[in-house]
Amino acid sequence: MSTADASSDLPSPVHALKLREALLAGAFTVDGLLDLLGASAYAALARSETVPALRATRGSSALDSLVRLFLLQQPVPEAQVSAVLPLEECLTDGWLVRSEGAVLATVDVRPYGGPEGQDWFIVSDLGCAVGGAAGASGQSHEVVLGVGGASTTLAGITVRTPVSAALDIGTGSGIQALHAAQHSTQVTATDLNPRALAFTRLTLALSAAPEADLRQGSLFEPVDQDTYDLIVSNPPFVISPGASGPDARLTYRDGGMAGDELCRSLVQRAGDRLNQGGYAQFLANWEHVEGEEWQERLRSWVPRGCDAWIVQREVQDVTQYAELWLRDSGDHRGDPARYAERYERWLDEFESRGTKAVGFGWITLRKSGFERPSIVVEEWPHPVEQPLGDSVRDHFARQDYLSTHDDAALLADHFTLAADVVQEQVGQPGAEDPEHVVLRQNRGMRRATKVDTVGAGFAGACDGTLSAGRILDAIAQLIDEDPVLLRDRTPQALRLLVEEGFLEPVPSASWPAA
Image (spheres, rainbow, N blue to C red):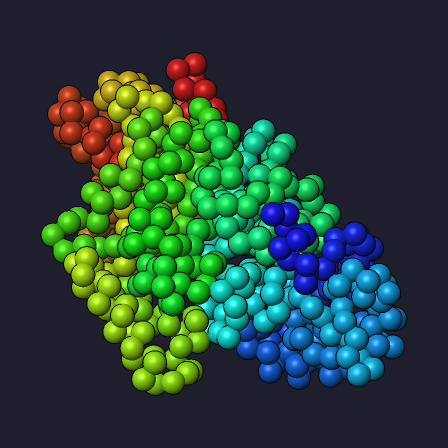
């Protein structure tokens, strides 16, 4: 089935570039919206709250008309629209329809800023620019959402190195495919929902991005035995009850498998679809099951031949989780008895599997082929600074470095303190010496680690000039300690500082720059 046949009610991209030119001429961009609406109304719009934006667009400027038309779903007088947009082409292609002397949009078009300042547009179903807060309430099960927090999170953590082939699984409105098109020779985008593929085509066309190879189907089914350098997916990871029954009515979130099986299957099958050195990056939910360590559960998901970095960003108990997704589908606004019945069904499902909580986070695989892969599973609920793609790539580079350098090689190497690291001294006011010293990253993962006097002195001396061993020898002399003993007890702490990105190895013949 072609996407055109399955989604004949959606616009055609034939004149998308002409529409794009008109939108840009009308300042319908991220910067233009911020200038018009102000920070408060702009932020409210991102939460699907439209009243502040309605108040800010009472004028008759081109941008007022475009915001009311495409973001607020308000009728706009035909004369105003014809002064801003190529009206007849928009009507013919199905972007707009006439209604009692006014014009209405048929889809939501949202300005979206690319990483290098590009003016992009994400196309989605009306009223579904973002998820959550009942963003899908009253919609059909094939509703396609636009840009939400999960979408931008995945886009931000993705490694952005040039690749030949990229795959976006569960493409939705196409935001991941749009990003991938900037650094990939060929992008393939799949989705079980044919409407999603049609929206992805519109998003790419209206953003002046290269076309993608769009394929309908579940997970890896549409791509046969193809392999890729980059795989990304913001899948339908919600752990919901009755996946094949009446509750599984939102394709974008309910994956049709019990528990966290969809996420496990997606991660495990990705190993066979990655080219050597390639990355697979996912958002996922996973169950915290009674009697099982969640870290070990996730370790079991990692396919052979792949390194992994898994970061748990949030944990919700089963009641919080059920309430979140019942609100997402708008059940809290309906019949109280029906809401209670659905709530009970979610809790029954969790109880049947011994699920006590649900974790959310990021999973990154790298196809290394190593016999002893690096698998790091950690909890990091603290603020981070996006984009993190470079930090993800650097994490695996550091793991490679540490796995190929024993303690002697570590002490023979030279290091520099990462540019974003600052030192904080913590102690009572007026005290002669601090109680402890903290090294803190101001960017990326924004980690902090406590170090002793030796660690602080060592980090401060790492400017790439002296080897680690020679720095320790100098510190030993200053504190009157046996240099041999200091060399023996320091490598473990040094490894931690390297692993977490506080210290960076100086490129050498044995360790070239990335």
